[in-house]
Length: 399
Ligand SMILES: [Zn+2]
Image (cartoon, rainbow, N blue to C red; front, side, top):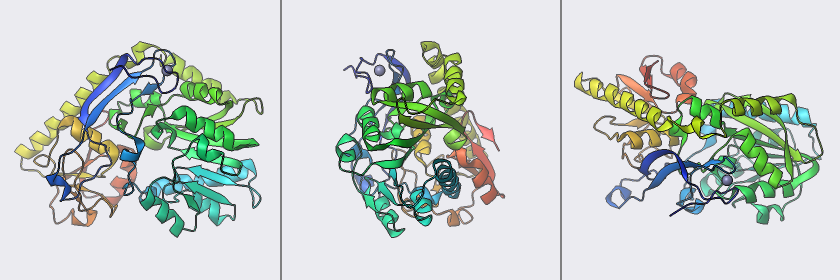
């Protein structure tokens, strides 16, 4: 069966990487669910050679992946909240937002970002389809609509001065409809901020573990500019961020309302220089992923032989991709500690490794911790100075 590009509709024929069949990475299992069959889908990324959008064909409907008990709460990461607070301060000052303005966030999660807008007395509204996180946002006083976003919902809402869609565009199956919805929602002088992990960093940093089913598109500036243009929007500015291993924050406005900054041309040139719109950029990615997998397996097998106990830290989506691709099970990694109470007591999808509270690390007698969310390594090493920390991406590294 040939899949079609979600932006331009061309058949997808060029495979970038195949990570095997995997369950949805956020489908944490209860002990009762372990007795039932587990659904897996192919985790295979393609690049469209017509519009160069790198993408995962949608096998599972978004409703199946972002379930009502979706377990990811943004506020559990303190560095992520600090990032959101800095964003709000800069945006409010830069755009001159006040009590007459409206800020709308798409995929507002548990209100980790809008809480800082709300605190400044600026009207705001969250759109968040998963119930548990929407409820947590409401508890912070943030009005939240529990629906998926697109043109249909945009036509029902008041126009906004600022639309924030940070770390959601990559997770949207119908990317054209989503961006057209943003265009519909923006006031004539409005701005939209879109953050996404940068495809350039994914390839350069061997970040194959950031590939999972909820992550449908792997975006470059040029691909986003092409999709935005299709909806009547233009990229007017771009910032490079260290988050998620290297992200872009792209600012969109209605076409013809602002001149693009020099940064837009600079990032576009860097992408061209890396050959993102040629097949050469994607050759060898599979081989580099295999090297990281083999490095991790070798480390875990050696530790096992030496009687050293290695536990995981951070039950993040990217950890599940890595553990399932590498075929790691509880015999090599007996538990993964995570601060989110919603994950504790459950099992990781696929690998069935139990999630425990970090308070139990001492009684579990861990000798080393495999840090799965390697992008938070600084925060985690400050928290656990007494353990040897290990990361597996881009290649196995003893911290
Ligand atoms: Zn295409």
